[in-house]
Amino acid sequence: MTIDGLIADLERTVPRALEEHGVPGAAVGICDEREILWSAGFGSTAHGGGTPVTAATRFSVQSTSKLFTATCVLLAVQRSLVDLDEPITTYLPEFTVHSLFEDEPAGRMTLRHLLSHTAGFTHEAPLGSNHSIGDGDFADHCASIADTWLRFPVGHHHEYSNLGIDLAGYIIQRVSGVPFEEWARRELFEPLGLARTTFDAGVIAADPERAVGHWRPFTEAGRPLPVRVPMVAAGGLYTSVEDALRYVRFHLRSGGKVLAEALLREHYRIPFPAPGQSLGYGLGLYLDEWEPGVRVRHHGGSGFGFQAQLCWLPEAGYGVVMLTNRFDHSVHDDTVRGAVARLAGTPSPPAEEPAGTPRGDAHGLDVLAGEYVGRLEDRVLVRVRDGRLFVDDEDGGHEAVPTGPATMAGRAGRCSRFLPGRYGPAGYLQDLRDGTVRYRNDAPESALDPTYDGTYVLRAWGLPVGEMRIFQDGRSPAIQRLGDEEKEDGAAIRLAPISPGRYLSATGEILDLTGPDPVYANVPLDRTGGER
Image (cartoon, rainbow, N blue to C red):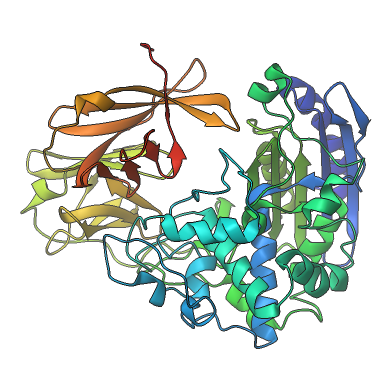
């Protein structure tokens, strides 16, 4: 493989992919630790108009912001303003959050929990979310986190969320005495020469040549997507492909003179790993294998009309970035993963599987059987047949062997463990290789108030973008995302009453029926008034 050959292929295939998927514009680039090897813009900053995309065009990178924010927090650690393992109430003494699992959970949370998505937070806040930005600013958005409910005990496992990252950025704002966007500019962007990178919504809105986000419901309605995002630290960053590559080079050069190498290692360390875990989420980034033996550090972003992917190969010494200005496609992932496969060279040995093969007897298997559901509604069915335990998932079916008191099972050459939950000894199924958790989809018997049985509309800034159904599913209530011609219906997630008008879903979210409209996971639901 030659870099010139890869570049020639990208120059030919990227325009074709953008046209096929209706993406107005994109910027792509490759670097190594010494220099930017190639960068280019394709298409336009806006559908049917705008200006040609260049390597300097600003794009929103959405959740890729989390990676930059984590670096900003580590720079504050370097300046002794904060400590990764100090309770966050040291910096935000007024902060509280609701929990069904423990008293005063805020006193146990640390910045390490926030940056690794292990604090227990849900994904959205009541004020400022992917469904409604509201009128509040970053501080108002972070203050509203106190009205949310944790999905699991602090430190129990990793579960992706905007809220911990935003709270971490807000802590830096409080301890530094300057807005978070100013801290990021002064401490990270200027030292790295990132002149086209900013969290500042005013600077972004004033840029006439920035890329404009596109999402089909808004394009069809002739409505622009919001530019200001209250989730500043978790999703508010705009950057150019060349600036993003300069940031990747900062990692490939082991922090250069900006961040101490010991703190950079904290970036890449998985906090609170499961036994034998070798992959997963560090502080603000994924530590992954995209192909066997091809180790990749990365973070993507998706939302508000944009999708992005940024990654680097620590062993091969290359980085790849792609920024796009349309939501709901796979061009950015397909392109970057294809480039990574060609840049990888000789792969490293695959990450080790958890040591040991589970052994044990087959007693008490019934307590493990059931459906387990992940964050993206990926489902695993654990069942008992002829006195043996089987796991069915997207990779097919395979036998599982529990250990001792039914706590661990083999999964297709890998291992998972069952963790206790609210309703028994098998509330979670955790992959021991990457820490991924699926929730047991179960709840005690109860009856739904028939007033709430029906179909509801999910809205983003007033426009319908999906549907949810609340209904009685056999012995317990359930909530379900309804599909369309492109997507299947989601799992029917079981609900358990926890107080009058409030239900806890099997995946740890709260359905609140105490107000004028139902609210699920802090997202309001509108009644359609008719059958689907």
